[in-house]
Length: 408
Ligand SMILES: NCc1[nH]cc(CCC(=O)O)c1CC(=O)O
Image 1 (cartoon, rainbow, N blue to C red):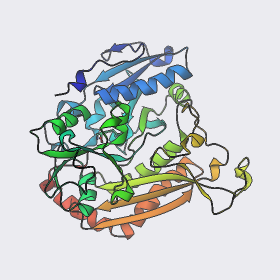
Image 2: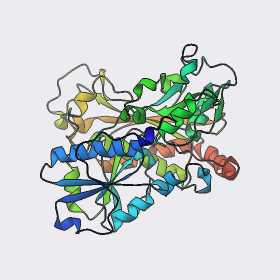
Image 3: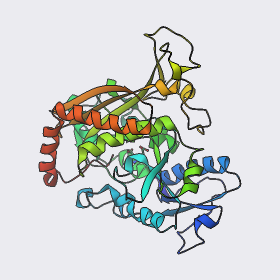
Image 4: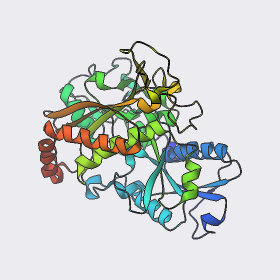
């Protein structure tokens, strides 16, 4: 075991306490109570958000409260027995509803697409690289550098239906096995010379936030045989009470509107398709700027050839991300010309054996959050028109037999 989970957190002056039984109502003080899960990644993510909040609001106090959720406490129990993503969020949400917390920091990917009626996705910070990565066992690294390199029958660890289904399409020589636990646990299982795994798949964002990008052997993307990431992957979602104006105001200084709109579109796609069940949906969103198409909203953008599509923020930490969002990640506005930017979404639904796929690509000018929501719904309709409905029906019928769900 690497003991990663027990590693001391190097943070600033975070006050680490257990969740208090009661305290003064947040509306009467300048102390805000921030909730998080207890895993190392969750805490690192929360530190990132709280650091931004402290920078933006130096006179306020932010206290972090971490708790182990039902999901954390049941690492060994098969997930399908719960079959409910709310496992990682509902205890924290209860504290938010009781005013014991004022905001919760989540991996957006782990946030259910349907939230309790009195809560909302208050803000999304600037997205990390949303791709998945291949991590090869250290003892095999000298011989193999990619999935295609791995010999027939090699075992790849991932518990995600989305990942397995997509990888089966193009890598029929591989076997897939469950690997559970937090990122540190999964890596130590891979590294154990006696384990069956030749490689595991992890999200780039989690590894990056833990300072472990050096473990990445290759990045999996559309070019690597069609691997699309999970809805919300790489982004942090901040959950708040709908009626809490003070927190809404706080968050205006740390949110990223581009990430928010992309995330809303992705979540709307998933909400439309999943009907309460977790299914293998892969997605990729990208902001595209069509330069030279000047109109009233485009003031400030230089005239360039109309066919020159200019990537503003992409899958990878692309060339021009800095131009899309201010360096400090504090700006929540779309930059000049941003109002006419288009959001491109590629999405697919795959059958569990990788034999059937419905995929689509769509683009739309995105001038509001409502449009983002609508766009996700439209893309879902396109997928259904291409057969996603039948694939999903098959998966739902098989659910009890499959006995696992897409947790990533
Ligand atoms: N389901 C687990 C999970 N939830 C969030 C992340 C980190 C990546 C992210 O922030 O989207 C991970 C680990 C992984 O998928 O490798």
